[in-house]
Image (tube, rainbow, N blue to C red; front, side, top):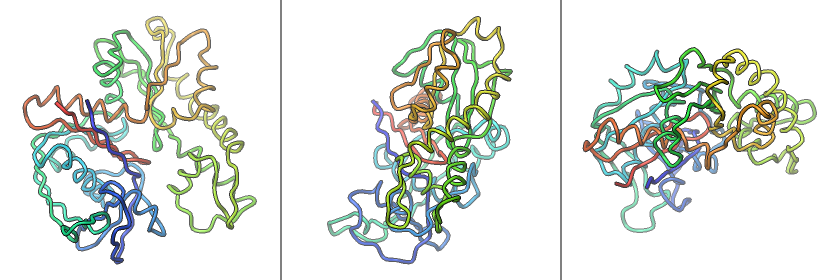
Length: 340
């Protein structure tokens, strides 16, 4: 069994005292880092004015360092203070950052946080947690989903295509029993492309004020947005931009990467990542491969990568602390802890 925690990948600095505004740690994340206090995740969306995150950051950059410490704090709740972990990067970042990430993250972290946001007993105020990362592995993001498909609940034994519909990037590859076929690996614009198209369409008729990209992504997911105190239905616009995203980005990327020889050995394609929740998009992919491939959307497709990270930790570092996976996604951060 895995315990999975999720929070939006946004943060905002604050100098406000926040007392009992949340129910628990995951919805009341507030930490101190480099002499500054930050609201993180749901708390930033609730109490902040400009919750944000830069896309595809790495260790040493403020966005990554703040959100990573919040993830460690949540992992500590379930795994204790001494554990091993795996995380991933998209293909275009993996080779550049993997070695550096291992070196910078395999150490002890002191995380200072404010429990006043959620605690109702006497133990409120600034708290300190010391977390020792015994081992850290870094793998390509899509490899996490493949590990989950092959060694998790699905126990997939055949060759297959897998496409990850993430917010920052869309990635695809062929997975065989011997590993991935590197020639088939593709990486291009993620769901952010469709969200920005929606923003451009909305700006033709509405003033969006100071809404951040991540606030617009939440509206995109919900299919509605409030502008000038009125609720606007976004479902038709979302369908339009997702169709454009598929035709201009996804279809050509997959057509250029997958060859006839790949279709000779693969009979199914798995769609993972947060974008796989949008039937408007998955239906277009299903139509594209109708009669050629079986299109499969796993349960909770956005959790496939972090489950694979956690399983990878268990396999690589057996007996060296509780296995943990951390997915530093551009839209959401997920933490998986294996209950052995």
